[in-house]
Structure formats: structure tokens, C-alpha cells
View 1 (cartoon, rainbow, N blue to C red):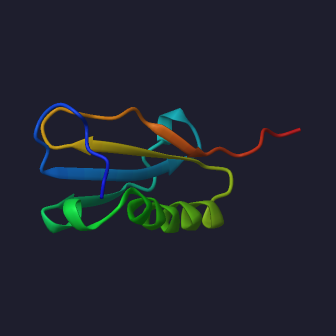
View 2 (cartoon, rainbow, N blue to C red):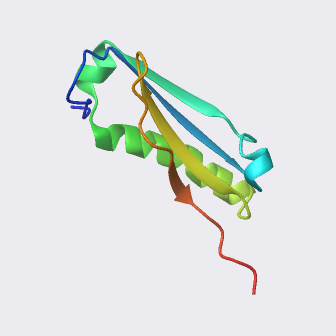
Length: 92
């Protein structure tokens, strides 16, 4: 089961994967996943993480110099903090 926020009734989850070369262009690869109804009851956090990882791996493969992040937004105004899932190593 997907971990929902403790307070409130939430019927939709949107998970957005994105990335870019710098702060000014951090929306170079916007990929949203929308989960509602059966998905919220039938999927697990690991299922969603696995789907997101496919997109993250593709962005990194094509653009290893991009920073990639994920945001999770529940229906209404409940948003979880943005999470950086990949950052390139600093140049030496």
C-alpha cells in the first residue's frame, strides 16, 4: 500500500520526475505519473519507486551531467518536499 499523509483524505497522488543541467533549466525532462483509485490501494511505495527509477535511469544515461529530482503531490494542497535522487559528481 502507498504511504499516505496522516491527516486529510487524499484520493490522487502525482509523482513528478524532472531534471536539468542547472537551477535555471531544472524542468528539462518533466515526466508525471498520476495515481488514483485502484492504484492507491493496489500499489506499494516500492512499485512507484521502481517506476520512477526507470525514468531516472534514462535521464542519467542520456545526460549524466543533469541533476534529477522527484516531487510527490497529493490531491488538494498537500505536497511533500522535493527530493534530489541524482546529482553529478563535481568536476575536478
